[in-house]
Image (cartoon, rainbow, N blue to C red):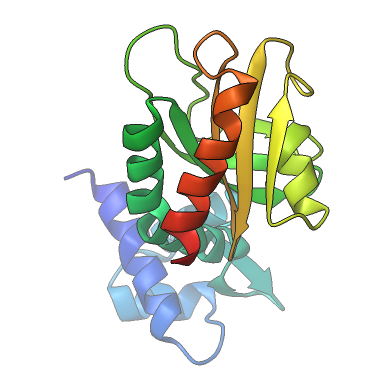
Length: 190
């Protein structure tokens, strides 16, 4: 095990259990670390948003909550994304809104080739075709080459984000979109 990683997780665990922010000396004392080690690790964790400083004391930062929310979202919606990819033969995605973009949280590739692919961690504009329509209030929306020429998609809003299926028009023609929308509705709301 890499000592810095293990110590960093011990710090995060300590801060998660503390009712109030802790200073560097207190973290070092409770974890039996050199104060310089605790200081360096806290500074590194702060740089990535895992902890934040409040009046020279530390508490868990926004990155920890965001990671937990993404993991929960993925865990909840992964079975639906898998079923959509299996039933449609096209790539299915789940994503969460991050300002003017949607961060791709999960992807299950369609069968055969060619298929659409965008790895988790990448982004699409929140205004993109079917995704944009869903974020504007439609329950389920279709996109016939509106966002990307030659690519069709169907999207639906779910608690915490969006799920969509996308495919090249040669594999996912406009005539198939209503069936994909029905499959999505069945998997999400029945």
